[in-house]
Amino acid sequence: MTTKRLFMTAMLLTAILTAWAQSVVSGVVTDRQTGRALSHVSVSAEGGKAHTVTNDEGYFVLKTKQTPQYLQLSHIGYKTRRHQLKEGTQNVRIMMTANVVGLHEVVITRNDPMEIVKAAMSRIEKNYPDHPELVRCFYRETARRGSRFIAVAEAVADMYKSGYNRGPERDAVAILKGRRLMSMKAKDTLGVKIQGGPVMPLMVDVAKNPDYLLKEEEFYKYAFSMEMPAIIDDRLQFVVSMEPVGASLYPLMYGKLYIDQETLAFTRAELQLDTRDWRSASDYMLVHKPFGLRFRPKELSVTIVYETDAQGVTHMSYVRNEMRFNCDWKKRLFASPFTTVSEMVVTDRQQQGDGVKRPKGRNSFGIRERFYDKVEYFDDPDFWADYNIIEPTESLEHAIGKLKKHVRK
Image (cartoon, rainbow, N blue to C red; front, side, top):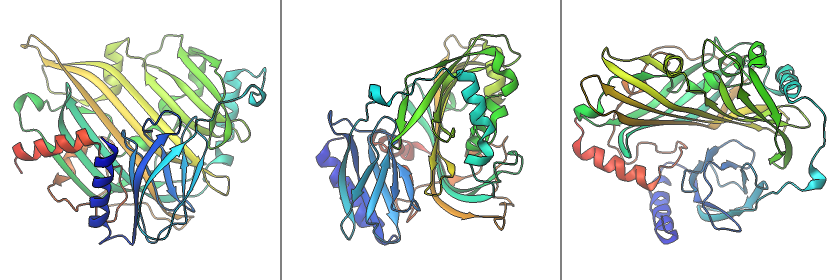
């Protein structure tokens, strides 16, 4: 997307959205040295009340009740940026500077990397909320057959999380507003249900639900090693990589864990399922498939990002999940490659404390439900009004336009 086109789009969006929100700040975030657009940058209004992330083209829109004085931007490997705003709606271009770890910043330690991970797990109740909280989120799920988008679904949801001194059993997600588009071509409709949906952030929270991805009693099946430290939010991080080395009845994970060197809080996790045993990987990824359909997993990767507030409490803020797999019916000669991507970003921390109520009723989302069955067809250009969302990329907008031409309500 060219800069000229980007700012023309931003100005049009601003004009439309100002009718609902008192202040709309839009723009693009780039690397100061290379000019490359930066994706998945955390963008918050001053005070951290409103929040979003940049899309794959570095573009964002942030809606607030009043114009903040500053925007706070953070991204792994970059210096935290505090960008001052003028009064009124803004279209901005913000450059971030890479934060290279110097030799004088490297903390030389003989600590066993496995022991560092165990120490971080032992401090979860100290580093994360000890009370329930209700957060507003935006969720998007896309599916592609080859390179062609065949489905898009989006929702604004409330996510309830009990204190981190409790398990995830009572955590819940309730959809407030959602919409979907799906291809009606027979070859695009397989009826496969895979793990995911708006409950995915509850499942993959390694600090709240370590048994889902990171069971401590399974640590002996991994080789842990120390990587070069990284900087997140201007704070030095341990980076611990993990690789399966033992047999298991279910697939294990490759990946990296980022742990704050001072507080030992998990700040980021980048994990990927070991799919070498495709049968056990299929059991892990699938909820349901029709009889006679062959399912071959290729990749399941998940990124979990946490942010620490001014009081030193760490909260989950962003989750991205990507699955790649092949599907075909037994009578067909060739298999079709499919890719699903889901993202959830916390846009607003609504309530916290013992008085927070768990969402109930028909809007609550079950772990075995398919997201596309919970929301309706959409064709409203002003659907999101003053909600904060992850802005769609140019290719996704184009795909939505094509799906609208052929979809049946």
